[in-house]
Image (cartoon, rainbow, N blue to C red; front, side, top):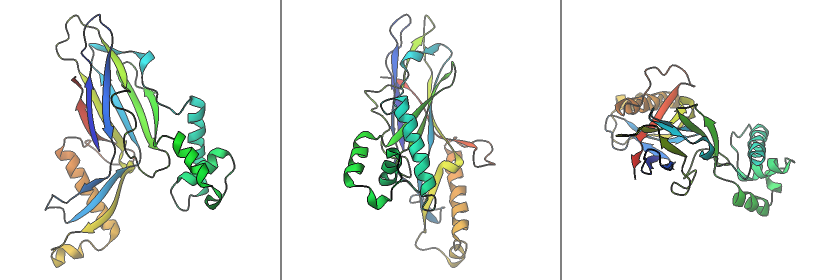
Length: 256
């Protein structure tokens, strides 16, 4: 996952300035360059929340907040409902694919084998990889909930980082020395998916015995993940439940 943010020049009593976020989701691979971690594992995000917060000397234009939803709110609601149906129908497999989603959207849940390639192609052409749902944070800023549509995890870029600014800001002060615009990517701890835990070569017998059980491995991977977040000063003071919010990345938008 990578994130960067910038904004247009901000001047008092001038036109509003765009705030742009360049965000890309990809699979993370952990442990390869850390000798103290006795295994490697992969990380993916199942859901995330992007928040843009503005300083007290700024305000954002509520009329020009990015609301990148498929075609209309009606289509957006229909798509979310179809995903819920697909998830319920194939709960045993625990995943949603293009065929099941196309079937649910059509209003008749057919077997995936009955979904034509043409149905899937039509869906691919009109369906975004990521559902982006806007959410107001009051005067302090705005957030966007990010969820995959037909994939199991978030992938790629949810929007065009140049053509689609997240919002526009205006200065409230005559002199604005250092405008503060904070961009954070957060998620619940349960939305971090750890997989493919593989022990490294050259482990001692004692180390190997401690890595026998998968659940033990997963707990150890979670421990090292927490350690990495603490090193990056992103870990919350407490992580006592699955819904506790974790900051995955935090950057300050700079003037472009």
